[in-house]
Length: 303
Image (tube, rainbow, N blue to C red; front, side, top):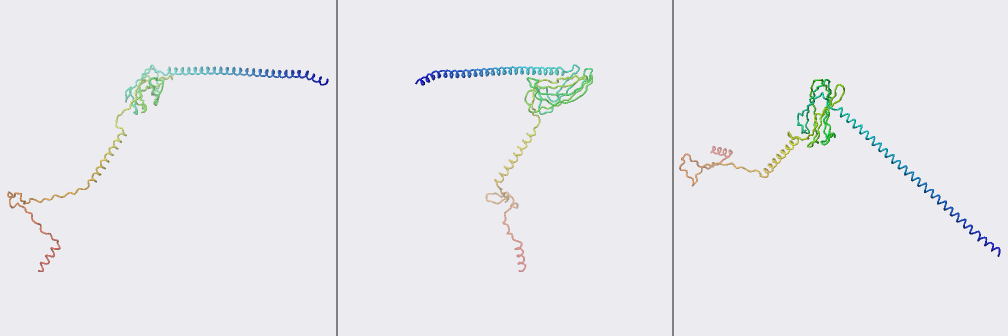
């Protein structure tokens, strides 16, 4: 009994200590797990912060690139404007040249379509150097903004040299299409030339708003043949109706008129007509065939 009693006491002493150790081990394990989770969450937060910083840096780089692209475009646009300004500065008329222009087939406010037109350009060299007339070019512009080109007519090359103190006349021909009819346009005609030193010039011969018109002169071939066809159809209809009515009416027999002369009827007074002029109707003698006449003659001879 004592042995059993002692064994029970030992169990009572050992079990609380083991339970304490187990609970302490579990608590330590949980504490370690919590520490590891905290560490992992901190690392994830640090990674998120790093990614956000990288995205912000990329956005900053993109903004910088956009700004640089806009600056480059602005610089290019400025260069183009400068080039255009340089060209405009170069392409001006010379003070030693006088030009005139004349429309030969139309007015200065209306240009007919589908009709060959002619422009005469006069050029006078009043300077001491020769000029080389290169070409003439015409174009249609937007009426509200002449810098906007709508249509370019064909340019004609001349390469004609005008000596100092001389004058010349150039001929420029063009034709507008029917698609431009009944519409206003800005119309520009320019003469391009250069001097002996290679300086280029441009003189605006005409620069104004015009209206494209469609003329109705002459006989249209299509309309003429249409009327001719209608006239032929009308003639055929009339002929057909005439034939139809003639076939339905039938043929009418005509009787020859026979004159019977003056007859002595009871109601006619013939006393005033001389006797020798009276004509009486006599009964006609019976006609005999030649065969009967021959037979009669032969019989009478035998007798």
